[in-house]
Length: 265
Image 1: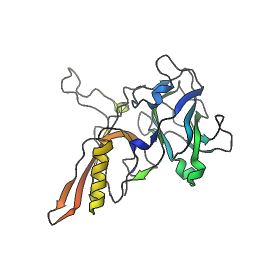
Image 2: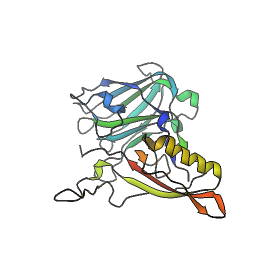
Image 3: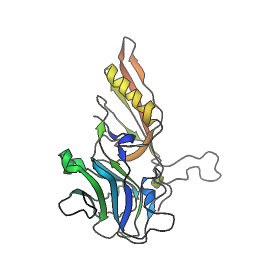
C-alpha cells in the first residue's frame, strides 16, 4: 500500500510561543523547529501550552510531535484557529501516547481525518496543550506541521525496522559496542517496491535526489497514518530495472533513517 509522507517543502514552520510553561535556559521554544529532535524544548512544569503562528491562514493536514516524554494516558489536544486565543469553535483533535516499550511513540494528530474539508482546517494559529498533567516536566524534541500529506503513488512497500531497533554499533568504542538505547531513535526502515510505469520511476527518483536525499521529511514507514510517524531521511536513493525486457518496470529499494533523538530523558 502507498506510504504516507509530507515533503520537506510542505513542512510548515510556525513562530512558536509558550502560553503555559517556563522554559529552562537553553531549551526554549525555538528548539521545536530546529530540525534536531535531540535538542528539545524543556519546561519546569508538567503542563505545557504551545501556540504556533503561521503568519497567514494555511492548510494543515496533520501535526507530529517527535521525541517527547508524555506519559501513557496523558491526553494532548491540538486545535487550529484564526485568533491567538483559539476559541472553542476551532477544529481540532486529541492524541494520547502509546508505550510499546520503555519509551513513548511519536505522536500524530490527524487533522485531515478530524476535519475532512480543507477550508475548515486552513487557519493561522495552532494550539497544543496537555489536558492532564504529565508525570514529569514536559519535554518535546520537535513539532512537525504537515501542510499536505501525500502518498508515493503506485508503490507497494514492505518496510521493516532493524532487529536491533535503535542500537548503534560503535566499532571504535572501548567496552560495550552497542551504546545506544531505543530512545535514540536512530532506526533504519528498509523495504522494497515495484513501480510499473516510467512516470512513477521518474517521480520516485526525482523526489529522492532533488529534495529528500538531503532534507528530512515526515514519513509513516508502516504505510498508515494510524501508525507511528518518524522524522527521517532516505538512506540512499536508487532505482533498478527489474526486467531486461521492460525497463518501465523497476525494483525500488526503500530505506529511511530516522533522525536520532539523543539519549533517554
